[in-house]
Length: 311
Ligand SMILES: NCc1[nH]cc(CCC(=O)O)c1CC(=O)O
Image (cartoon, rainbow, N blue to C red; front, top):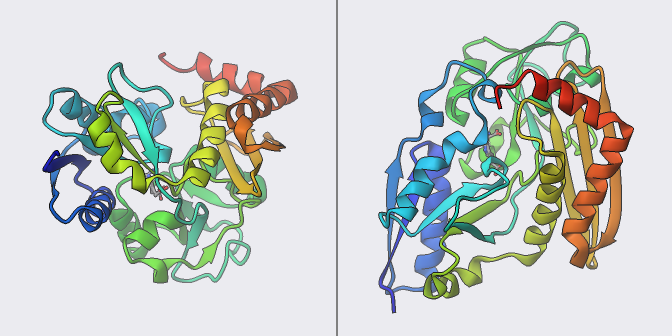
């Protein structure tokens, strides 16, 4: 039996928490197993001054981790599913998805009790186009500013008075023990989450059957089905490049309820659609929802933005 599992991880506090969480779960299951972290920097960590959507998107944060697995320096990488690109490089795959934490976005403000209570013209920080679009649609009066960096540095900018409020994923705040900073949990109707938000995934070599068997108890089937539907919608829309897209599924009695959103960053256009179906058809539901959104005009939003992209 294998005696060691090495986890490639980014060095941000949230990434380290997530890697340590998987380490602790594996060690609880297998007391003889030695689980080591291999912390590393990614290109995404170095590019902090420009909006992520303009510098190449999600792949920036996972490439170096994937290379470490392909080179044999690490066995697995633990990812926030919302940061994982829809396609995987040859030789690697998403091997399992763990149980989802709270998928909602959180409104954080030291001064105002809710999004609704923000006075006109308030400054809100978020670099997520998905959050910007939904915020602007709801509150066209707000001034929305770019806000990048890890969770702690975003909170520090809020505390320094650069913004009246910021929006962050509830899952990240809860994992870091920062629950008390959550002023208001936004309903998914107010802020439809990003696909995969709140879920952790493990990437590894799909041909490493011994490793897969060790990891298997960490899998959470219901979460995997939901995230599968959400990612299928994103894949069908080919959304990744500068487009506000939200996708959120929930599962009840083996029925999936998938909601999707495509909008323009200025919030002028927000297209919404939803569908229901058996969990066994998760992938098809994602495709069907994408088609509904395309028929409503998402194709025009997507092509307008792709025109301005360098790929
Ligand atoms: N974009 C960075 C990122 N990736 C995952 C999370 C939160 C944790 C999760 O969704 O699992 C965050 C922080 C945020 O959006 O506030």
